Length: 419
Image (cartoon, rainbow, N blue to C red; front, side, top):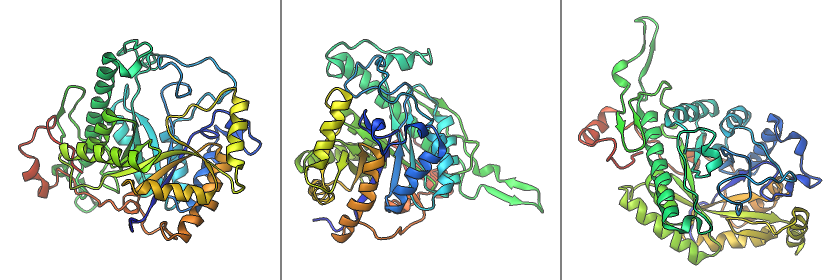
């Protein structure tokens, strides 16, 4: 068994990941669009010493995982509507001290320059605890919000069809370029670019601000950023991956990949594929975490969690359709599963509370003490930044003098992502 520390995160989405979660007595549906609600959730996660929280977002109303990809459903009995994840993160970050804050950002249809500035700002607001979860979309109704592009109707075969594979490859390659532009903009100010010398009247050393001159098939961005280099240098980038094409995005562009696997064998296969893509991208020497993604219902009475899932499904009118494995059981059983999956090469887990008012405290007050008893999870925060919590070094700017000789002859469109 690995002796490395286990990393643990939670994914926050409204009242919880089950569509009937908002109807549970413990839920607070009237507060979903308030800052206090989100502050309470993240404070609970921090009390559990978790590495970070992710905050879900999208460019359209929520729809079930198995709904038609080209438009929202017409249901009115489930939570619909979201707050902007980056703005929520910026609001709650100053209320916390240690936990990482990782909003979801949709790369498709949005601009990397704006995102780089927003997440750099979040890194300043949080004191070095920012990250992002990059997401793509090919939903035609979401494209219609912007009017700049369209996507094909894929039919019943969906992404399994040749047209679906081409579309998926296009948006995922675009997302990899998006992340590369964002990273270069974060590096476009050297760490000591701000002089702030009142005596000489020099606030900025212009020689330490750099054009990134990125030119590729999806973006042409000159730079530099208008925000100084973030406290972490490079905030943490993560992405969810269900198969080969998303594994390529993780290998090329991410610090953390979330994989939806249900046993150690499948975990081992997913990790191997991501490591292969990581090596192909020239990143073999870099730390890249692979987390397992699980929906969890946790109750200490045997059988109670499974019964609760059945009751929630009954309220929703159908079994819960999930893109990730769904766990039901006790804290000890969940700890057993995490240790088993860890043997497949996973370095951590992102847990999705089915009912956040019930299952988030079950994670922080039940699962975490169980993992601590087993000696596989921290008993105190050991770093002040998210990169520090994850064991990621703070990289130098690629444009700093020591990096000039490495980057001078490499065109931005062809360069492998560097950290």
